[in-house]
Image (cartoon, rainbow, N blue to C red; front, top):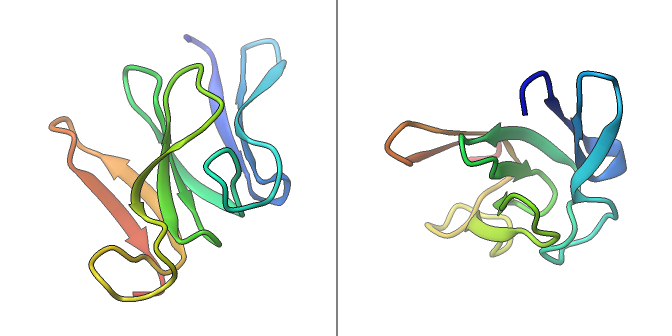
Length: 110
């Protein structure tokens, strides 16, 4: 929505959307954990034109996508334990998508 912005709140293990008046709504996470309904130290976020939120989840070593209105995220990449394998991440801090849908991850531990 116009005038709104998103904040990755690492200490609260959530991502919130703030509107122009300062009101906010938690749009992803809210409790610390590894279930797809939870986050553990979220960092970088990317919101696409459809309103889907991609989140670099540091301590879960994964990137998840939270579709507009969903209360559970979808695993995009990582989430298979910390490591250097093809399906693993190690402390991702940033995520970005280009106009073709390619995903770029800033994975600080690899």
